[in-house]
Amino acid sequence: MRENTVGTVYRVSSPAVPKRTLVLGGARSGKSGHAEALLAGTPGDRVRYVATSRLDPADADWTSRVDEHRVRRPQSWSTVETASGPGLAEVLRADAPATLVDDLGTWLTAELDAAAAWDLPRGTVGPRVDDLVDAVSRYPGRLVLVSPEVGLGVIPETRSGRLFRDEIGALNARLAQACDEVLLVVAGLAMTLK
Image (cartoon, rainbow, N blue to C red):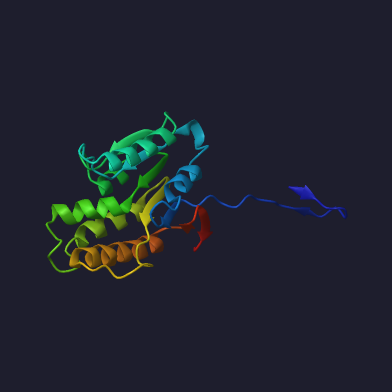
């Protein structure tokens, strides 16, 4: 509380920390680094980092990108890899004080692969998306989700490219409704959308 010069007492409160945050951005925009910074200083530094990508030992560039993320994270953060373990919605149903999911584009790609949905009608992975959105909306702790924003560029030439663009756009829109805060990172700068 603060008292002004005439003796009136005002309550001063800090803005509430959002419970669920969706961080959107293009490739190499700084979205992952920004998401990590949002969870810096989490009490006890207890953050569960959920990595959704698959590693391909033959892809040195991708391995290097994953290594960059690993080096940047505090060693005290635990890591769960959904590509070789439990599904993302299942992980989000397990209690943790704070969770960072990076990223939903690689999660969606894995889901489309698993359903062999690249040549099937849009919405084939709908039940998996529904399950994820439900898990996000019910998550009890601090949650930060990272997802690519791919709908601002050219229309992909291939059917699979258009399918991914449409599906990730629909997923992002649904998650934006389930989250308390939505940020767009462009050129390393975060803009608040919600």
